[in-house]
Length: 143
Image 1 (cartoon, rainbow, N blue to C red):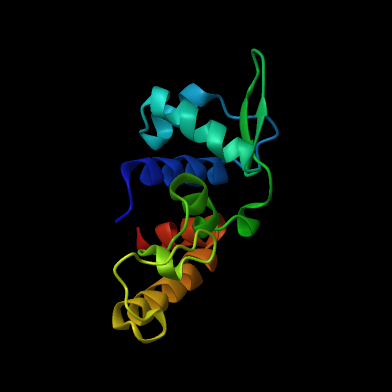
Image 2 (cartoon, one colour; image 1 turned 60 degrees about the horizontal axis):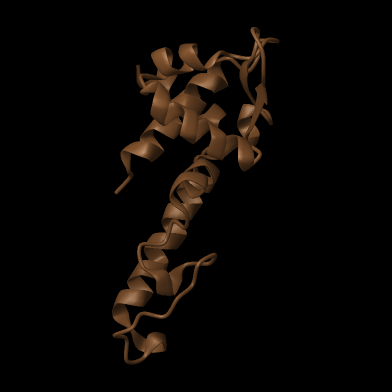
């Protein structure tokens, strides 16, 4: 299940995607208000996204945040991985944080592992294949 922190990150990034053509950075207060994210939470989330290279921050009176890349080059999967870590539901199928399950007798034949690998693959395919630009376009089409 997607955590509230991930939903906040996605909302903030989707809002920043609408501001991508603006030459000036978007102030944090505006992001918080428009994305409906508590400012204290947003500060931590934006710091994580900046450290991961998804955002550029500008200090000072005219400071704020901008996407580091065009909207079509930032995927929802990237954002969620920065906030949550691996997409895998169980550690034995994670590509970035693999750990064997303590109670598994035979990993190669484990039905749970086989099913969860398919879930991981499909989740990654969809999230990595959906950019901020795609998500924004889908929102507009659904409205």
